Image 1: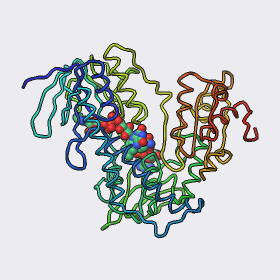
Image 2: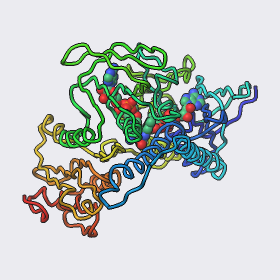
Image 3: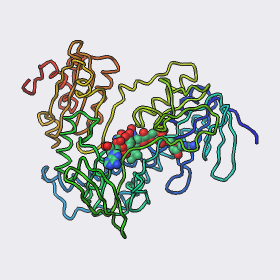
Image 4: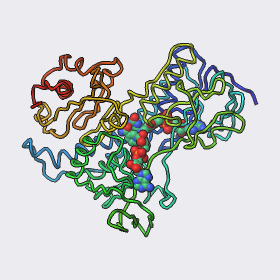
Length: 475
Ligand code: FAD
Ligand code: NAD
């Protein structure tokens, strides 16, 4: 078999992999990128989980369902009424599929424009930086790279008693493609996917029950943010049951009977569809042939150092298959950093300033540490917050729920975290990211002019509240 040589071979064309490939090609390196995924039409689709069955399709459905919810629940306040509002699920899913096709096709075009050679099939790293690709047409090709970047991403974790059947018990893939609104949707796991996709189907009329094993809601978020979000979700009718340990999921005809135990003892509920969203694990099955020297940690993630290097000469790993948050934009940055390191440039990702966003209504976002983390580590801090209910723009939009909180070091005033819940906070959180990347203080943020009336004024007032000088609320 003839072997084709490349400077860089990337396995996986998700957010991490396609960023690495395009940036490497921009830097003049001969680059190949391999991806095994097929789209709904059975044709190769680049872009990974994010573009096919993750970030983008979920946001398309969140947006469609939000429009419907606003029409049926919010517009009345503005004096707007509509008779017989209805939603056509086929049209909504079709719109989502069109967006997915546009963006997965867009990656193929970007590869072409940047001279990245795509290979469509399953890639396996062999010893000596050789990669074999089992292509969809049944043929195998062999590539050799001076550098190989592993960007295999992640897969849904399956529960042994609730195996995915793609119809009644589903993961994100199935829950993004229901053909009708389930009357009763059960969700196991009140994490990011459970809350986002639970919200989509709740807004469209499903009765949604979310069973969460932990006693605390959104334990990774700031406790006040989590409390505010939980209150708003309850108002919307999302039934979130905490401390619920599910032990059985019996599929009977077209229903699932779930058995779980919580503080009240053993309980059962019956649902029409079950979404299992209990986390994701690195997709390393079959990725590494024997003898490559690449190591996996006990969670199955590829071991890397702070520069995403595996310790094997010329082999790197990035994105969901390595440590750190499983977020598309974290993968983007690692892809770019690794390509730049390979080209001999400086490349670095600061995992301490990766923003988190949950695209529910209200949105939840944060960067940096929570008050709870700072207390636990004994760091002295001061916090200031500002409610959207006191902000002209938010009230004018009829979106008064939530607040912005800025946390700064008690002695140096350096910003240590920003925590937000409310309308459009997915955009506002970046003021915190930017300030933290520039080692900014709460005083810096407080002295920066913010346009009036905007939602970003909540960030300004929260920063002022850190030193008890907020103007629009009592300090
Ligand atoms: P992936 O996107 O998983 O891509 C890996 C690619 O590699 C896949 O295409 C796979 O087919 C391919 N591959 C794997 N192994 C091989 C192999 N051996 N040979 C060939 N190809 C291979 N993150 C956000 O930041 N914001 C969001 O709003 C968001 N929403 C999400 C919503 C849902 C429902 C889900 C499931 C995830 C969401 N995420 C979101 C997470 C985000 O999708 C992931 O963090 C991101 O896709 C990870 O990128 P990646 O490149 O590491 O891996
Ligand atoms: P998650 O880690 O966000 O949440 C999983 C939840 O399930 C946790 O609260 C956990 O305590 C709970 N859980 C685990 N086992 C359980 C069990 N047996 N019974 C009941 N509850 C159980 O995982 P996810 O929602 O599957 O999402 C996976 C990842 O995908 C996220 O962590 C995130 O990295 C990424 N994602 C990001 C976004 C975004 O950025 N907006 C959206 C979706 C997914």
